[in-house]
Image (cartoon, rainbow, N blue to C red; front, side, top):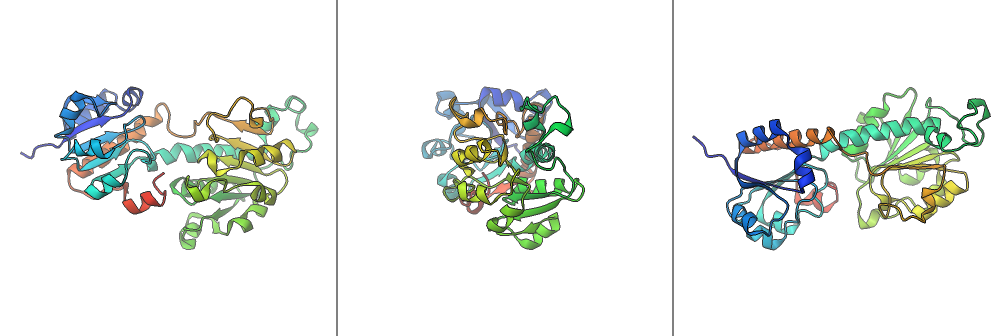
Length: 339
C-alpha cells in the first residue's frame, strides 16, 4: 500500500476554521498523513519545525507565514504548496521556484464571487442605484425627478473591461446576460481571438475609454499598473460613466477620481482602495457619487468552502500524479498573472 504524503496546514486560525469543517477535514485526512499539529500559523515554533522536517505538502491560505529561505531550509522534503486562496504574492518567492516546488492557487474559484459582484455592480451602475440611494434630493422622489445622472438604463450600454484576467474573462462572459451590451477589453497581453470567443472586442485603452458607459478594472497590481487609470484616462470617459474597481486600489489615482466625482461628471463603485481602508479625511468617503464596500467581492462565508474544495481537488490530483489544473509557474508569477 502506498504511503500517503505528510501534510501541514499553514494559515491563520480564522482561515483554518473558515476553510475546514468536519467533512473537509475528513477528506483531507483521506488524502494525506496529518500529524500534530495539524495546523499552524507559526512556522518558526519548535513544534512546527519538527513537523516541517518531514512535510511534503503545505496547504496555505490567508495568514500563512511567508516561505522564507530559512523556513524552506527547514522543510527539505517539501514538494508542493497548495494555496486555498487567490494570490500567492507575499507567500512564495524565488526559493520556491529554485527548489522546483509546485504551487497551485484557488484563484479560479475565488474569481467566481468577484465576477458576480462585478456583474451586480455593472447593473446597479446602469440604473445609478447606489448613488441615487445616497442622494436625498432624489432617493424618495420617483424617477421623474432625477436629473444629472444620465441615462438610467442597462440596455445597449458599453462596458469596458481593463484586464483579461481570470476574473476579467468571467466578467465578459457574464455580461452576455445583459441585453444589447457591447463589451470592450483593454489588455496588452490578451489574444484578440480569445477575447472575441468570450464575447468582447480587444482595443487599446485610449480607444476603449471614450466609449465606456461603465469601466471595470481587473488588472494585476504591478509597478507599471500603478495609477493605470489617472486624471488623463478619467478625462477620456464620457459624462455619467461609472468606474468599478474590484481588483487593486493602486490601479486608480484616487485623488483624480474624487475630483471627477465631486465635479459631478463620474461615478464610482469601489470594493478596493489605496490605502485600505481609506483614511477618515478621504473625500471618497463623503461623496454621494461614490459607493465604497469593505473588500467583500472575494470569497467570504460559505464561498470559502468552494476554495477549500478546489484545493482538495488539486491535492487529490497531486497525490494521484495527475495533471494539476491551477498550477502557478515562475513565469506567470513574475508577470503578476497569479496575483
